[in-house]
Amino acid sequence: MNENGQRLLELCSYHNLCITNSYFQSKPHHKVSWRHPRSGHWHQLDLIITRRCDLRNVLQTRSFHSADCDTDHSLVCCKIKLQVKNFHRARPKGPPRVDSSKAADPTKAAAFLSALEESFPRLPQCCSAQQYWDGLRDTIQRSALTVFGKRLRSSNDWFEANASVLTPILEQKRIALTNYKCTPNDKTLHALRSSRKILQQTSRRCANSYWLQLCSNIQSAADSGNTKGMHDGIKKALGPTHHTKICLRRILGVTWKDMVTHTAILERAQLPSMYSLLRQRRLRWLGHVCRMDDGHISKDILFAELSSGKRQKGRPQLRYKDVCKQDLKSFNISLDIWEVTAQDRLKWQKALRTGLLNYENTLAKHHETKRIKRKQQQVSSSPFLSSGVAHTCDICGRVCPSRIGLLSHRRHCVKT
Image (cartoon, rainbow, N blue to C red; front, side, top):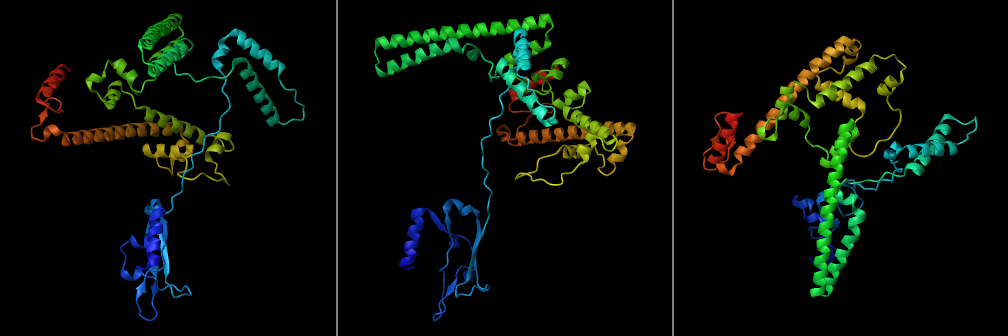
């Protein structure tokens, strides 16, 4: 290595660069690019340099001696894998939403009607339908925002409901804590303890009154027959339920302690899954549209194709037509003859019923296979089975991690 090579290495080390020619295992004659005319020795003079962070994108760097470059140096090529960078742009702020809950107030409703009559646009007769619609839409939106106001997002908790009471007390407690940290003495400590005590008492009182008021509202809604208000209050108190079959479990009297799978719940209730019902409803509507006359708007939209357009980068978004094709495949209905079958309403309904049963059986087998595989993985990776002793229940076949666990499980298994 000469002085120029040493300077190049120092430059690459200083700027965190890499010489890609030396990172790949190639043949010796693929690493050199220039031959000395008198000695005949080959040298590596032509280099490709990249940042160290981009080295993972370089696939290969080598020289090609057969390429005619009109020079005594050989052609050096580098294969690079380019990745499109995703630019995360902030979404534009949408139009404000109207607080429709205030429409139940008769005073607000009357004020909205009067405001709508006063601000209704007087458009000339020569206007198009689009101009009429734009004027009507803007007028209704403007009047509703003026009377009802914007809808604010709320977290539905006791702290936000009593924020006007708790915020000043919290600020006093923060000030007392800051004073104690700046000047620690008995006076500031007593003030801090006093502010903490007041905050604790006030927060407990606010939380208790919030839950009592919420329970009272739910009970009054149930007594008056307001089912929507009752369910809204329950959802506000408990939050959204994440269990997909909680209603069926509650009707059948099954709890999570019974260790009953979702498939068994559906078999007991003699109902198909929600996924199967949605697929069946989509295909019923598809057959209804297919039986419509040519020229109908719904049929033209469903079977139409865009003559020109441009999609975004990445995976194409699924159209409604693509979802229907997936439903047809899952119900074992041929994509070539489904239109002929859909022309006869009775045959189409029979095909959907048969496909629903087949799809339910396939789905149940798939879930059972996944469950067995998951249980086998848990058993094989269990540290309790390293000694070779497996505590297996002779009634249901469940593997327990210990002997005492097997006794506890068997007591419950015998009762059920």
